[in-house]
Image (cartoon, rainbow, N blue to C red):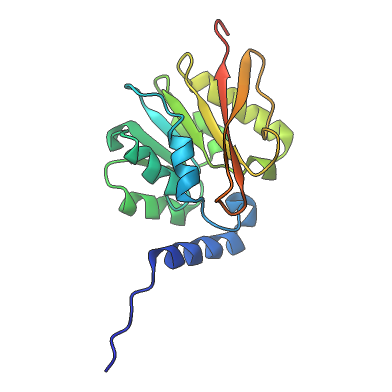
Length: 194
């Protein structure tokens, strides 16, 4: 009797991702999981040093894996995932990180009070949401960041997914061609004194 070959991990990930996309298209927002190259490009924007890091919308954990590989200890990483199945997956896949299942667009209600964060990394499909909702999210994000700490967001668009709030700037940090579809990494920061 022939032994069945194991299914490659990337095919399992793709199937899991597509199932969630079909069930919740507005919250998944992509046709494939983020590439490892995109995860590394996002994680590279996290400053070295101490401080807690928050990841919004980790999905299957591609960016999470890159954040941990960058040297962020699991105890310093909180991931906030809206989808209960992805949140459960993150809990089993990455022991030691803090997994919160809830709404990233309501950070006070979902996370309560937090110390100022060293970075916030987001894979939220911001272009799927109304501009008012994106602007409100940016206000909540900047209220939680430590001085000079980055908000790191990727997008498939040619321009940043939301304009920086008053007293902040945005720059394109990377353009990842080997992602489906190609993506750009945007880094937002408060200006000095803002």
